Image (cartoon, rainbow, N blue to C red; front, side, top):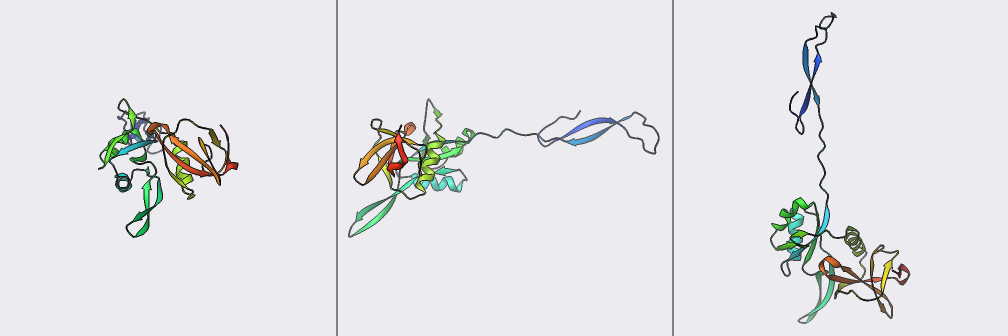
Length: 204
């Protein structure tokens, strides 16, 4: 039998068929049969990339050019500049860009200028919670208020049961005209605060 590799054909021996209606002579012949080999699909997960200071946008652009799936959450900040006001677009998680890759592709990420490392422990990159990243990603598309916040671990914890950030848990901040929720990513010890409707939350 022929050796088999990906995309090869498997050769199988048969008795030679009669050529003129007479009975088979029993002599073997080879007939190729296409063989499809399914290769395993590598699992993809979200990871946090730590960047050089103020290089988040440049790194995200490089990821896009290299067809590396990434997510750089941004927010707008009104700032005074000389004699006028301007709006700046800044990273919600300063110093970080998120990538969704198979771990085997980490070298492609580390080769991008401005990347320092993949966040992890003991030299091993740590997977982020896909639900948290993708819910934040979808929630920010609604253009709700969002900005960086100091990392919180203590406070009144609530669960978002409906709305753009459904499924997430955070720490509730009360305001006179509404509620704000502090969402934290434990792996990078960073938090953001977003607007939520009081009817969308309940005690965790």
